[in-house]
Image 1 (tube, rainbow, N blue to C red):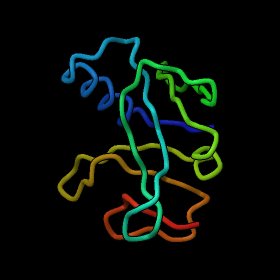
Image 2: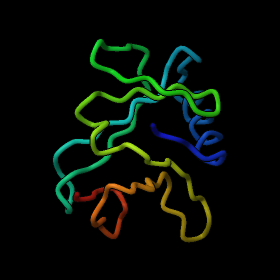
Image 3: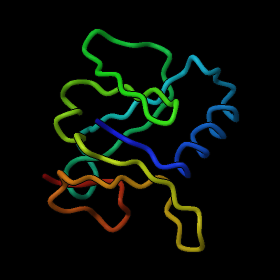
Length: 108
């Protein structure tokens, strides 16, 4: 399961509106090869639910994750930081053995 904080939810709703995406667009979270630690997170809005997707809902936001990515993301919380030292979206991933300084890539 993947969860999101209230701050992340608010920012997702704001971004979805700014991109002129309706409520039928869900949040897709994926893990791809790359980044300075070997794996990187990918976020996008998607209105297609694929047969291999796992679908979660937290705070009225549907989250789509493919089965391969789910192995890396179980128990992850998506947060958003917008303070002076804010980095934008941040993943609190209990499966990551290390993360890079930017917080956008990780290793297991």
